[in-house]
Length: 408
Image (cartoon, rainbow, N blue to C red; front, side, top):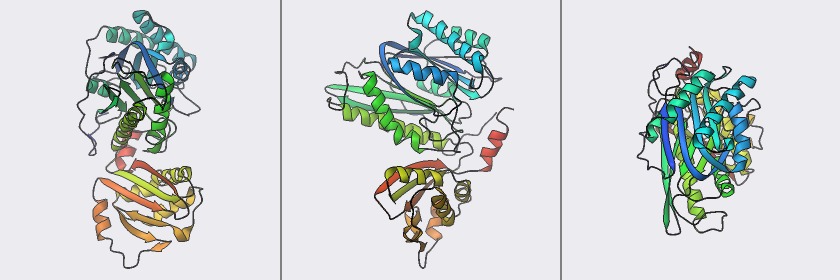
């Protein structure tokens, strides 16, 4: 499938190498394409790991195994297969993952629990063991590669490579974070929403790393949606090699803990936005800010009801300031709302206040705003202090074309 680059694409950033992390890619040819589709990340001994996974009731074997393995807190390797999700494949799917894990753990002389596997692509097709075996053998012998190479290799319908970086000071040490992600469709906030991998040279206990990732996930990955569909394979993982030499972080009371958590959150927010900017067929990046709700949780659910509404998304695709569709989405969210206190705006301009259209409203500046690529929608319920921000994209003919032909 030859996809045009998203008009919302961002350039791939300069990202530092992370001490204790070695990147390699190879061609397993899981699909009929001329590109690398297998990634191997080798991690130094003692690397801490944390992860969040899909809440889908039909997850892949990779997700099931990852949930169990991450409890051990240590990692030596990550394998990512692109082109085949290996989900809904029964015992054959799990056997394929176990084969990969055994092959890698034997090479690294490490525990099988320290080898993590992710797969992404078509659901319902068992991962071919022969291609996996040959691909893993090739990637284990491959030369090290760049972050951008990895970002391209883990992709499926993505139209541009996605990466993010940040740093933090812990005591007298500067620690670095580099991360890559893939995601374009089947994106909905339900724990994690794509395949994302975060690497840092900081020394962090597995438990505290998990706390940082959970906190960041709640206000980043769990606040984006492209199409309201939750994948069987969604995974976001963080790996900390400890090579920076800082005093290990183990709690929020430790010096530098807040700075490190803020850097993790910054990277997650960057990655989450990049996924939305590459939403299948997307032409516009939409931020929906909800305030005045009964609670933050209520505001979040209302924001998602707006973000997932096909009528709202198509109106914005058509550059139509149809605030009535936003009213509809607020009303259907199932959350406390008062029609006569509701206010709605676009681009910082109120179109409706306190349950009725703004008197003598001039639609010209709003129409100009909707012609741009970055769109803001503001909703104030006027009944409480709850607030939340979610991000989505518009809904165009491109989304239909991509998904109608996905397996072709």
